[in-house]
Length: 295
Image (cartoon, rainbow, N blue to C red):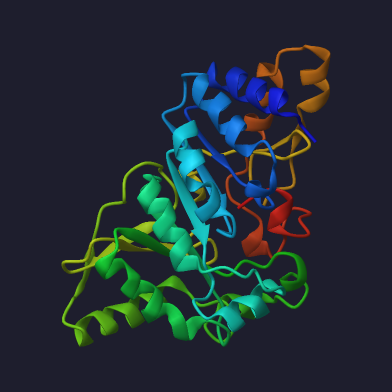
C-alpha cells in the first residue's frame, strides 16, 4: 500500500502536470485511519481546485465535521436502497446506519454539493427510483442513477442481450421516462438542469420544477462518455490506470520509492488511454470488483 507520504507526493508531482481535482475512493476510504490527516495534507499542497470523497456513508456522520475542517470540499455517497433490509441484501452485510442521516450530516458540515449514487438493478431496487428522486425536491442533494456495470460476479452471466431492457441493466432512457411521468403526476415536470457545480463528471442532470436538488443519469452502458473522459485512477498499491475498464496500467510505486520523477510514467499511461472502455465488449479490464480501484 502507498503511504500517506507517497500519496501526497504523487499528487504533488501530477499537479505539476495539470492535475487539479482529486477524489479519494476505495474500497471504503473512511476505513483508512489517517484519512482526515491525508485530506489536510492534500489540501495543504495548495494546488487543488477540488478535493472530494466517495464513501458508503457508514462513518460519514462521525467524520464529516473533521473532514470539512481538514479541507474536504464535498462527498459522493452510495445509496442503493432506502430500505434497511434491502440495503443489507445488496451489500451482503448489515451496514447498520441511516443513509439519510449521513447525507444530512455531510450537508450540515458544509461538504457540498452532496451527491447520491444509486446503481439501479432491475427487480432489485428499481421500484425505489421515485422515492430516491423525491429527495431532491426538499433537499439540495443530487441523486444520480447509474446503469449497472458487468463487473465481478456480474461479468460471467452478462451477454450482448444484457444491455437491453429485459436484463438487470435499466437503461437511463427508461429511467428518465419513468421519472418524467412521475414528475407530471406530482405536478413538478422534469426539466433540463445544469450540473450541481464542482466536478466535471459524466452525469447528465435534470430537475423537478422548483426542486432544490437535481436528478442525474450516468450511462456507461447505453450512452458512453469516453470521448470527454479526463480521469485516471491511482490504485492503493500505486498503479495508474488511465481507464477504469481498460486493461492498461503503469506502476508508479517503484519509481516513487527510488526517487525517480513520475512524469515519464504518467505520459506513458496517458498515451495508452483507450478511445473507449471495454464494457460494451463485455470485458472489464481484469477487475474482480470496483473496490479494487474505486468507482
